[in-house]
Amino acid sequence: MVFARKQGMSLLLIAMLIAGASGEVNAEDSFRLFPSSRFFTGLDWGYYFVSGEFLVPAGGRPGSGSKIDAYSDLGISQTEAVTLTLDGTVFDDHFFNLEYTMFMPSGLRRITRDFLFHNRLYSTGTLIDSKIDFNWLRLFYCYRVYEDGALRISPGFGLNHVRFGATLNSATEEGDFLSNSRRLDITYPTLGVETRFLAPHGLDFRWQFEAMSLITRGFVTLLKASANWEIYPDINISFSVSNRMTQSVEDNQELNNEWMFSFTGLSAGIAFGF
Image (cartoon, rainbow, N blue to C red; front, side):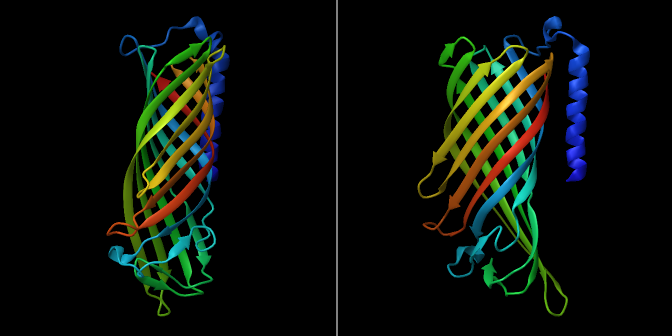
């Protein structure tokens, strides 16, 4: 974690040095790969607080799994995350955002109650080394319907594919190592809105909200506020605070799997235009 923080600070310092050496931002023209379009691709690093719970029975059989709390049962409360990003603007009115985010929180705790995970019983006092991983692919498109000076409002729709995994490692009294893993995934269509305020000196403030409830399958929400600064043509740095939630419920289906998680935190990134 310390190494990742040093990397993040190094990127930020490099970006600030470039900004200081550039003089006026508008002194150079940005590079465009295609006419009437602008794209940015980059990398974000974030630090998030995690809360949630999950229930994973074996083969979906009722009674072969217990609801497990990430913090109280496994000691998982925070995580780092890496996001690969691609943003695009076409004809000034069409905007899209493609993100691939990886959360991998882990914990080490001697459990204080018995529970079942995927039909394996973990008894009180067992030391469990656990890992929860999320791979979150998000695509969002929006169209500008309102503009007043520097203010732009763009409703849109998207698609979120969330892959959840849980791994519990422990040892028996005889010293045998046991590893129990399960992977699940779900796809959510979403509706949302993006509000932007284009400030002077290359600053771009954004507020994004996206959500959908599938009733019998769960829901997903994303709320994000960010400040983006094009410090030099085709070089953009960003700082954001966000919360994203995901719930998957399959009680009315054959699988009977369930999870609900929330990630709240800060991130910083750098992106390059073309």
